[in-house]
Length: 354
Image (cartoon, rainbow, N blue to C red; front, side, top):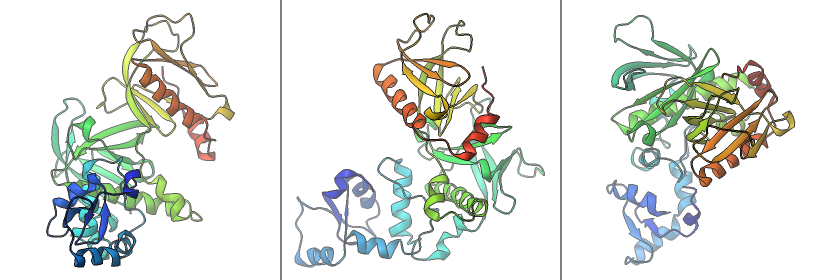
């Protein structure tokens, strides 16, 4: 699962012949009909079990259980939420989805419809809504009424992102879906009671993005395309900000760093960002500085950050020094990455909102 201590794991599944980390061992214990877990150090092992481990191992299991895994399917790491890790283990060992291609139908067919609980934009209540994903139409749509002819929203696959946000949404299966509307970011928040269902939706969105990008970039390899299928945010959290004149005091806002878009919201679950700042690269005169200009007033939080863009300076303040350091590190990473040709187009469209 990509964790450092997996190099010296303390746990093993003696029925599958694999070594696992502590986190994954808990999930394996929940499927005892498939996986029988023992401690490498503390439990007794008989000769047959030791022999079985020796003749199998993680690479043998991977070759068997991932033999037909589609390139777009999201393979979680230890950084991912419990749901993604559990469904990955169940898909791989319990349902054997990557041995039998026909079991991949829910996310690989190019079309999927069903009901998801969607958070209301204005009242915050979750209501059941019909969703339809169609590769042929190049869109994910949802409908406010089951018999509605017209969808409430059409989200182009080209501009679609999905990321699991259980803590923010307040549901272990919470998924944030983001799309662009008139070059502004729009968020919707959904979940399904069934963990497999919501992970299938997530992978169906990734599959649709994969097939879209294969057509858009015919020369690109799978290795180039897979990182573009969905993005987790680089960082999220509260900072204070002031407006362009830098005279109107600082307001606390929720910030999300999504690739090169720094968005801010009044509330973490708002549908629309209050504003977005494009963050380019150092070659294009973008800079991040610790602290605020000496004349700055109106910030309650003391740990300032100044972002310099070709047009203006953006002033932010963090509550703690740790927050400040984390945000500066995140901004530095983005600024030190050279801009791609398509990012110049985004920068050009970008309306610096007040």
